[in-house]
Image 1 (spheres, rainbow, N blue to C red):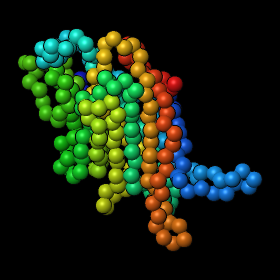
Image 2 (image 1 turned 90 degrees about the horizontal axis):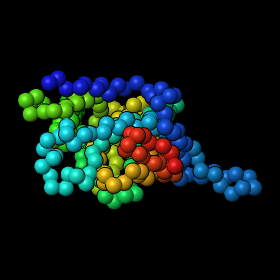
Image 3 (image 1 turned 45 degrees about the vertical axis):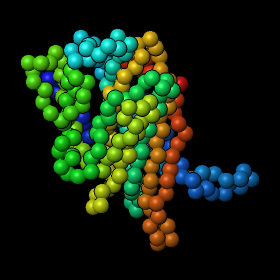
Image 4 (image 1 turned 135 degrees about the horizontal axis):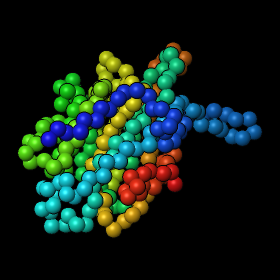
Length: 245
């Protein structure tokens, strides 16, 4: 059986793909005449509508052997976001994307990319396969033992990426500029393999972004942390849709 190949492009999000855009503000403040202080807007981030792949239990023979398999549904969620292009003299040194589900039984079994620290890690993580054992791996699964298989391939994947929270209901990815390279702004893409209680039709949670922006102030290079409020969302597995709460 030939796996379904899904190419993860590095082009910016189209307007029709956007779930929300949010301004990010630094902790530095400026005076606002007669109104106290105002936070400083540093940049913005745009989150795409997540793509949800619902996995049928019949597609995963290995999972059917679990004694509690009847209690769960499994979905693979593809998140994408773009950072605003910065003007000359400024650059991103770090960006963090965090997803929190309110239901503690909803957990991320696996996160991808997991850890991408070197060029060797880039090549290992650029292509991964979702096979019937509910694992994300950059290896082939024998077609003779597969009833469902999808292969995902990044057209661009740069270090440094670190994931946090596998096995938990709150999980995140941190993207860091390399020693000799900047953190590119467009088309950050990550995947979470979720285990959800079957008895729940609707899940709530929040998404949050934080960045570090490097810029020169009075001739000196400074790093400023900018973030936004946590954005509430509602996820309905039956419809495979995310909506803002």
